[in-house]
Length: 79
Image 1 (cartoon, helix red, strand yellow):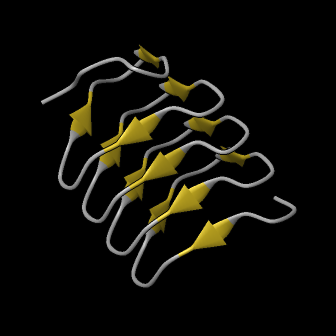
Image 2 (cartoon, helix red, strand yellow; image 1 turned 30 degrees about the vertical axis):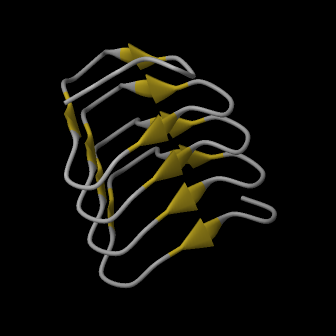
Protein backbone atom coordinates (compact mmCIF):
# COMPACT_ATOMS: atom_id res chain seq x y z
CA UNK A 1 0.00 0.00 0.00
CA UNK A 2 3.05 2.28 -0.30
CA UNK A 3 2.02 5.60 -1.80
CA UNK A 4 -1.65 4.62 -2.06
CA UNK A 5 -4.22 7.34 -1.31
CA UNK A 6 -7.50 6.52 0.42
CA UNK A 7 -10.12 9.27 0.64
CA UNK A 8 -12.86 9.83 3.21
CA UNK A 9 -15.56 7.29 4.02
CA UNK A 10 -14.26 4.37 1.93
CA UNK A 11 -15.30 0.75 2.36
CA UNK A 12 -12.44 -1.72 1.91
CA UNK A 13 -13.47 -5.37 2.16
CA UNK A 14 -11.46 -8.34 3.38
CA UNK A 15 -8.32 -9.21 1.45
CA UNK A 16 -8.28 -6.02 -0.65
CA UNK A 17 -4.98 -5.22 -2.40
CA UNK A 18 -3.98 -1.59 -3.08
CA UNK A 19 -0.72 -1.44 -5.02
CA UNK A 20 1.72 1.50 -5.15
CA UNK A 21 0.12 4.73 -6.28
CA UNK A 22 -3.47 3.41 -6.20
CA UNK A 23 -6.21 5.96 -5.42
CA UNK A 24 -9.52 5.16 -3.72
CA UNK A 25 -11.44 8.45 -3.65
CA UNK A 26 -14.22 9.48 -1.24
CA UNK A 27 -17.11 7.08 -0.62
CA UNK A 28 -15.71 4.34 -2.88
CA UNK A 29 -16.34 0.68 -2.20
CA UNK A 30 -13.84 -2.10 -2.87
CA UNK A 31 -15.52 -5.39 -2.11
CA UNK A 32 -13.77 -8.47 -0.70
CA UNK A 33 -10.62 -9.50 -2.58
CA UNK A 34 -10.78 -6.53 -4.96
CA UNK A 35 -7.40 -5.58 -6.41
CA UNK A 36 -6.14 -2.19 -7.61
CA UNK A 37 -2.96 -2.40 -9.67
CA UNK A 38 -0.16 0.15 -9.72
CA UNK A 39 -1.54 3.70 -10.31
CA UNK A 40 -5.14 2.46 -10.70
CA UNK A 41 -7.70 5.06 -9.59
CA UNK A 42 -11.32 5.12 -8.47
CA UNK A 43 -13.23 8.42 -8.50
CA UNK A 44 -15.80 9.21 -5.80
CA UNK A 45 -18.60 6.71 -5.27
CA UNK A 46 -17.16 4.05 -7.61
CA UNK A 47 -17.59 0.37 -6.70
CA UNK A 48 -15.20 -2.48 -7.48
CA UNK A 49 -17.00 -5.80 -7.08
CA UNK A 50 -15.86 -8.89 -5.22
CA UNK A 51 -12.68 -10.31 -6.72
CA UNK A 52 -12.61 -7.71 -9.51
CA UNK A 53 -9.22 -6.47 -10.63
CA UNK A 54 -8.14 -3.08 -11.95
CA UNK A 55 -4.97 -3.47 -13.98
CA UNK A 56 -2.14 -0.93 -13.70
CA UNK A 57 -3.25 2.54 -14.80
CA UNK A 58 -6.97 1.67 -15.05
CA UNK A 59 -9.49 4.34 -13.99
CA UNK A 60 -13.11 4.22 -12.81
CA UNK A 61 -15.14 7.43 -13.13
CA UNK A 62 -17.53 8.86 -10.55
CA UNK A 63 -20.17 6.36 -9.48
CA UNK A 64 -19.11 3.59 -11.91
CA UNK A 65 -19.91 0.08 -10.68
CA UNK A 66 -17.85 -2.95 -11.72
CA UNK A 67 -19.38 -6.39 -11.27
CA UNK A 68 -17.69 -9.21 -9.36
CA UNK A 69 -14.75 -10.89 -11.07
CA UNK A 70 -14.38 -8.37 -13.91
CA UNK A 71 -10.90 -7.30 -15.07
CA UNK A 72 -10.70 -3.56 -15.82
CA UNK A 73 -7.97 -2.62 -18.29
CA UNK A 74 -6.67 0.89 -19.06
CA UNK A 75 -8.87 2.51 -21.68
CA UNK A 76 -11.86 0.21 -21.07
CA UNK A 77 -15.02 2.33 -21.32
CA UNK A 78 -17.43 1.58 -18.45
CA UNK A 79 -20.67 3.39 -17.77
